[in-house]
Length: 388
Image (cartoon, rainbow, N blue to C red; front, side, top):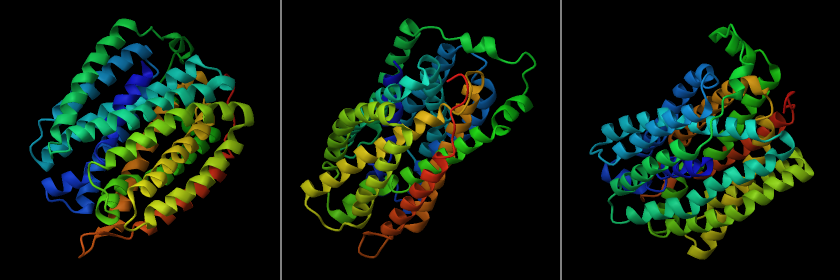
């Protein structure tokens, strides 16, 4: 059920980027305005995660999931009725408010159910929700929007989410054991101190922030760049997500098992350094044959997704079970802030030149690599907390 939630959450958050060319032409947007559209979801998610810091551990995990996923489903459905740029941004803010906490809640549930020694495999399986969304969900949404009707993917996606919500209500188990370990005199100050007063958790939050910056700096403009600069059609973009998603469906569980077998840092450093190769290639290529372009994008999907599995395994173990929900909300808040910031940064650096092609994408790639290198040193400082 969590993988299904992740599937719809990822499709909803990712679909904005490959449809960038359609949005920019439909609403006559600049690169900067499009970056605001992408970051609106993340900004709202940041503020909702701040609220989740205090409230996420107070409720039964199932009840929290029903409320959060329900709001997300309705918000996604409403996006299909937007008829202006301003209204669409407003609805993306509403959807992001609920969607932002889905990741934190999913990671909290997985961390409650699996001990640290088995969590790498569990994270690998959970990441298949991302992979299936990439391989099937995003290409299908792009197919629905291929004729320029960008509203249809949101209509179908929102309707499907409501069906899954019913499934969660019927079959998802109650999860309230964590409530028994909460402090009796719990206050906002005590919650903040439990996370921010722990240097290990602070290190984990900073490391996660750097990881997301390294990951998302180039992602918002990959598809628009491939269309304008490389010569790929809007329909060909579906192959990028189809092949990349299928590849990560296979690679993510394998990388997760390798994390459990060989250790977090070995796998993390290897996947991070290898991911620099497709990062450079994707941000520098000009007009390129479709087959070779797909080799680059598929390699990026495998390695960019793989480099997130190992560090998230240890980041989720930086907090004890009693404060895990609060910590995960902090993590998600920092993650959403990093996503929004990365979109702003890449949108500020890049612009469309006189030849209708994007300029300065290579500099975005270099910056992503710098943050990737910094994240290696940050992750090395994280320790596994007691109770994991």
